[in-house]
Length: 431
Ligand SMILES: CC(=O)N[C@H]1[C@@H](OP(=O)(O)OP(=O)(O)OC[C@H]2O[C@@H](n3ccc(=O)[nH]c3=O)[C@H](O)[C@@H]2O)O[C@H](CO)[C@@H](O)[C@@H]1O
Ligand SMILES: C=C(OP(=O)(O)O)C(=O)O
Image (cartoon, rainbow, N blue to C red; front, side):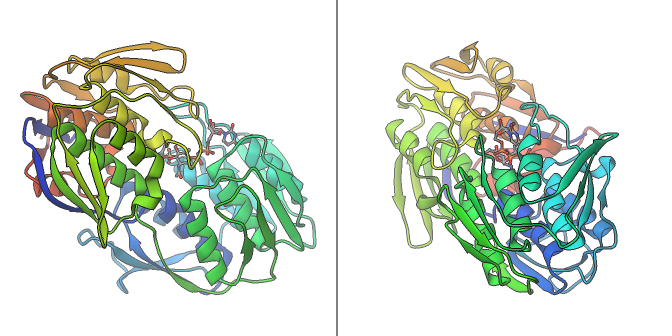
């Protein structure tokens, strides 16, 4: 199994191109199930999750070609991918595929809206929490669907005339349930109003793509989204928005290792709260014409308390990386995780570098230390694993990060992007 080997201590200098967002690309790809015409997505990142979703969509009858070619392309940033689903050939999403990636559960919305039935395996929990799907089920029921859980599958059936627009208030903010209901409501009869909807930029990106396909959606990016259903959607061409989590991750790497790096093709507006926390920690951040310029001092990091919240709050997907940064702060910081009940798996691994972190419920207390020391560590989930990479870059000596497949889910060409900024980092195979 591959590992990442890092020799820490180098400052980072240069530029890093930011990829299209995984968490936007996945729902956008799923939206291709809503139309018999071609949906073309530009700036699609090359990631394990994207490849897996292509297989899942293929099973439903989506014909996929990458930059006009049918074979999988393994190189090049910013792919253009064409998705065409003349008919949905299979309304079932199997346990085998859905268990590997939670977002694949979201196919339930478009498949149900277009075919009137959908049978999708429960995704189950993962390392960061139990992650139930009750809000998806309640929301789809509000649109008139009958839903049963049979042998681990969610079996959904629309009324004979199709889903019916409704007023639905989410009891809790959910990104995935907002995506799913927005896609389903786009093909429902009548108007749907979703209250307490997720406001993440990826929700806005999906809404913009659906609008380009002919959907009538207002309010995306606010807590209230109104969707007037239409009878069919057309094809469209849409560019995936920049990955704000990748952006924040590299900004935190520069803040911690020190250096001067421009993050290209991204935008400060996508991650204001995370950048505010970084500024408070002493990082210099300025907008450029096409990106963000970051100057980090590495050895003079101020402690900053953060609390994860739904957008526009501090993102849970940057919590582990920020904790990595705080391990080297001059003082004590508190990090409260409010979104996922078990998203602290990186704490025990950061301790291997010599970090001083104590946990009490959903709060981590991080007391900064003068130096981290490289160590063999193990990735437990996507964002936890990249926090270990960041710590490795700032630590003295050698670090190896195991279970690299977690990183490959969400970081395109991580080693290459960091190497071009002067980091000593490589992928090694155990043989
Ligand atoms: C592919 C993708 O975009 N993943 C992101 C998405 O995940 P995802 O869409 O799965 O996360 P949600 O916003 O749905 O989850 C937020 C919270 O709501 C809970 N919940 C959710 C649905 C439900 O039916 N019932 C329920 O209780 C979850 O367990 C969690 O505690 O948003 C998360 C929160 O920003 C991010 O960390 C993930 O990176
Ligand atoms: C938790 C994440 O992804 P997923 O929702 O696919 O597990 C993530 O992107 O950090």
